[in-house]
Length: 260
Image (tube, rainbow, N blue to C red; front, side):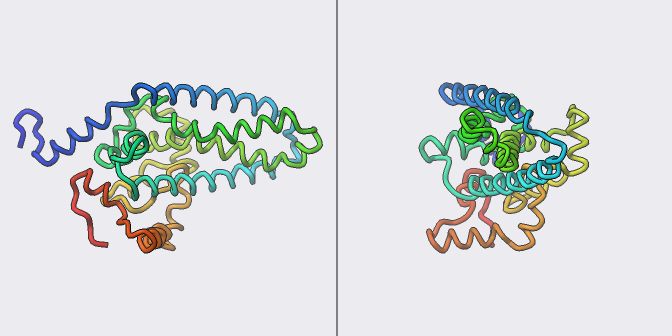
C-alpha cells in the first residue's frame, strides 16, 4: 500500500498506466480533431438549410420512421465499433493503437476519464466519420434537380439522421458517465431511454466488459445479448484467425483473462 496515494501496488500500477495513456490529444491528432469537428458542423448546417424546404406535413410520418431507423442503425454500428475496439487489436499497433484503441483500454480502467475530455477530444473521431456522408448529401442537394430530391428525400433524411446520431454517439456515451451537472433535457432523454441511460451502461463496465456494447441509444443491447450475437461473432473470428478476444485488454489492464 502506498502511504501517499493510499493505493495498492497493483492499483497504483494500473492508475499510473492510465495516466500515462490519458494525456489527451496532442500535436497532429488535436489538429485533426479540431478540423473534423469544424468541417462536420459546417456540413451539418448547410445540409439542414437545403433540407428545410423539402419538409412537408404529409411526409412527416415517413421522416419520423427514417429517424427511428437511423437511431437503430447508429446504435448497431456503435456496438460493432465498440466491440471491435474492445475485443481485438493492441495499443502497440502503429497509429490506431495509440490514438484509437488506447482510449478503449483506458476507459475500462478509469470509466470517468471521458468526463474530463473537452468537446473536441470527446467527439473529434466521430465527427470525422460523418464528413464523407455529409459531403455526399450536400453535393446531391446542390447538383440534383428538385424532382429527384423530392423522390429520394426519405433516404436523405435517413442518411442525415444517421450521420447526426453517429456524430453525437461519444457525447451520449460521455453523458452516460456524468452524474452531476447534466442539462435537464439530457436527463429527460436518458430517463425515457431515448439515448443511452446511465444505469443501462453500467452493465458493460463489469469485467470482462463483454456485453452491452451499443452506446448510442442502447436499444439493441438486450436483443443482441439474448441471441448471443457478440459471443457468436467472437467465436467466428477466433475460428478463422486464432485470435483471442480481449487478450490485449486483459493484459493492458493487468487482469487475469477469464475463462469463457
